[in-house]
Length: 133
Image (cartoon, rainbow, N blue to C red; front, side, top):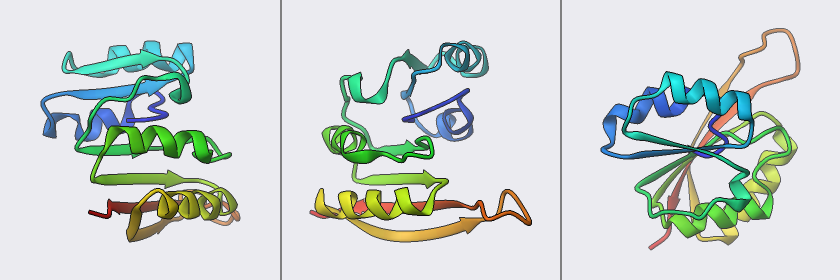
């Protein structure tokens, strides 16, 4: 769970996996995540770009408005995860990140748009990616 915040996604899907890693740079969010999540979730307080990637079955990334950028995509690639879920809150950043993900060998599999802020221009886009063999 990259850019894990207080552990929303780690807590939601964490029971499906034997081991979960959550990476978040905010000290207060990491403190909350440590309280929110079970003992099988390893919470790391650091920038995703400085984290030493581990092999993963699935990566969930919910980056800030600026998106993953090249550094975030590189970290995802280092996990060798065959499946990636990317939560994007900025269409421009998603466009750039989609191009980077495709160039890194991932294929877009599914897209869902969620209107979490009705009557505003803000939407969340959840995209599913599958690593090409």
